[in-house]
Amino acid sequence: MTDLPIVEFAYPGPLRDALVAAVLSGEKTSTASLLAQYADEELPKVGERGVVVDSAGVVVGVIETTGVDIVALRDVSLQHALDEGEGYADVAQWRAGHEKFWHSTEVRQELGDPHSTVNDDTQVVLERFILV
Image (cartoon, rainbow, N blue to C red):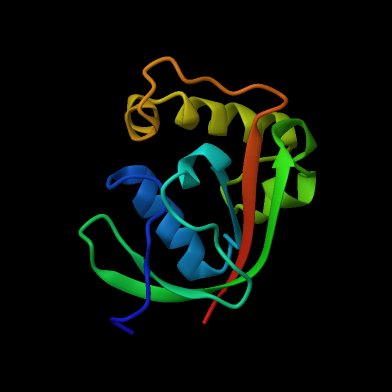
């Protein structure tokens, strides 16, 4: 298992812990990232596996990618929002939660742009996975 890439949901802290718990319970079977966040790394590929780590960096599970789509933010589906397992009732709630995260200091630092924003045309990577 040590040769698998590390999968980190959000940043260490309460959000990561909640997301990891949702993955482990089977509630979370999809995730979304900004395409811009993949500037220095390869996009996920169907069939790839990775080790999920918690906020302490402890390996807690292994996931396998079952699907990858790149879509405009405006085209994220209700099914994707529900499959993220974060309790969103509709796409508007999902988008508001994700915009808050994508506009956070941490994401803006990761992107190297303190004024980074998203809009309807922003490209997002939608990844589906299973816990193995």
